[in-house]
Amino acid sequence: MNSANLPEAILKKLIAVIKSITDVHSIYWIGIRTNEHKTYYYFNDRENTTKNKNWEITLLVVSKSYINDPKDFMGKVFTKMNQKVKIFSIHYTLNEIENRLMEGDNFLGLVLNENNRIFQESPLFLTGYNSHPVMYQRIHKRWKSRMSKAGYFNSKLYVSDDTYSEPAKLLLANQAISQTCAALLWVYWEYKPPIFDLDYMIHLCQKFSKSNP
Image (cartoon, rainbow, N blue to C red; front, side):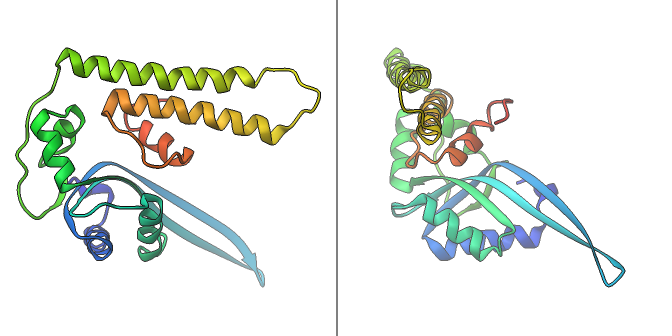
């Protein structure tokens, strides 16, 4: 991993924290963002400055057992890293990875390389792309289904009714964006999010899109 933006001590602690939560086979990084915040305030005629630095890291975590609640997993890492490192993790079991690699997985073929690897217990046998027409049809079918749902929720935003409810409008907008993100993640990564958390999905989409929320 190119740790230019992440101190070695932080990286080692992050690996140790993840391993303390689940039985890990390997960890790969997908993206990293550094955030710096400065706070200025005055007290008793003295100027004080505080500086805070934290990191947002997108990871692929391959574990030996299934992660039941990825959101809880990410929350535990955030807490154990003293709220300095927030992860957005994609989870597969070792068995799932091996099965996908047997068939050929385009997303894993890109991510599972030595430049992205930050921890590995044993080597994985990597395969090439799967460009079979059946695979394309499967991806296209799910894309159409997700975008149809997104279009449905979006259309309901403009329906006139007697009772106007801002929270209801926001809920519909949330659902429309969530379905769009899910469609994009399936097309680009063939990945089905286990949780429909908008912050999580938008963050993942930013790894292949220049659009900002």
